[in-house]
View 1 (cartoon, rainbow, N blue to C red):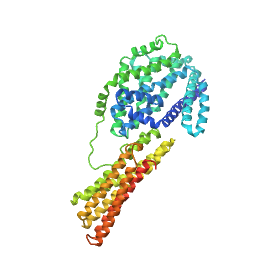
View 2: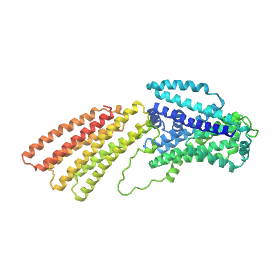
View 3: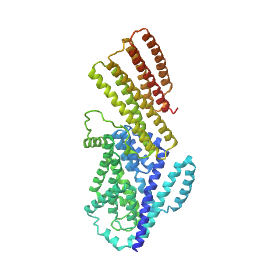
View 4: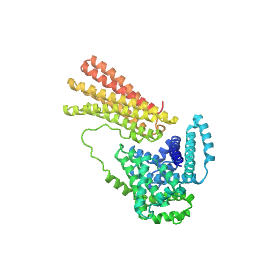
Length: 560
């Protein structure tokens, strides 16, 4: 008998592993199929608390993973696409959406899903080999694995025959279901197990298995489910550890929301559970009717999350204030430190969603090089030695930052590319690789301009007023090109016209040729020193190169 239990236990562990794998496969496939749409839904359908909550519920039902939705939401907060208040409403909705998983599992214990599994495997395999529909095939495989694992769990539960095992029955019967200490103990067990396995679905499956065999009383099963609600928040909080302050606040809000829900349910635990049991038609006092227990658990999970959301959705501003008080902004002092603003490596959930972080970071990169060019324009005017040196050092520091930004974004994109990407996402990754390379070249051009100005400063030579006017003219055009580039980088390419960038570039080219001709004539006429003329020409040429790099960035953005 012990040997039988050993092999049944292995089957049970294998079924749980298959369940987690199937749900992850299904979730990833859905996110790959609808990655851009999910990003737009989360970004645009959160105009108020109710729409944010409904959006979170819809997305979680679609991807079958509250953890995926929550980590996605934390990522969006980190990227500045969602406010903290919007994120809290989405997280509330995600808690409602995840109840669908419990209903699917309860169905698996009451309906024979074998007839669905094998056709899904066959159709999924055909679609995977037809690469055009491979993500649909992955989704069907995920569903098939999930249903197969539920069949295996149900079979393993029947083979264990725990209801006739006196030792197991006596063990669970030894717990006083009327004691709050027992309820709190099982709540803690559910929390710890969920934190360890990082899957609320696995804990729910174990709970349903134990309840369906009739050995685990419904009160203790519900305590495990409550613990799973707290434990599932660990995923988002772990993902947010290295993120910015707003992302950490969103993850903390998720934890506080679920802890508050568990707290008020504990205050009315027995009446609330009895009410749920009456809805299903189950009498906890009489016992028996083990087939109804999975439905009782799913009903409780739904009632708990819906009621908790209804209670707290009106207090989102207060929740914001609480998490902001618990996680205050740290005052930044001293010199600027290098860090990426939007990309957080540990927030990668799926490649499709991670691309958004890279796009935002690339847009920030573009803004940074224009700010760097602004420092160069200030450097041109600066006469004070101390201020000049300080500005020059800032430009040098920014040049180092642009080099590091290119490397870090490229590494992140390589990490994203290691996953299975849709064709659209592959194209976006290639475009961003081109963009960051050209943006780094813009940073180099700015530094070269600063070096020329530093050479002028150290040599004691200076430009004539006429040369200053000419440099102002070409640098103004260059700045317009950078401004146009940033307009393109911050919106959809279809909303802009690439012709504006080419027009400015043509103006820069014509002005450069005119200034070079004027400079050659002026040096020959000895209007100023040859050294001054050489530095002037270097400045003009570098502005023209910078304009070329801008065109390359915009072309990459337009996919040309």
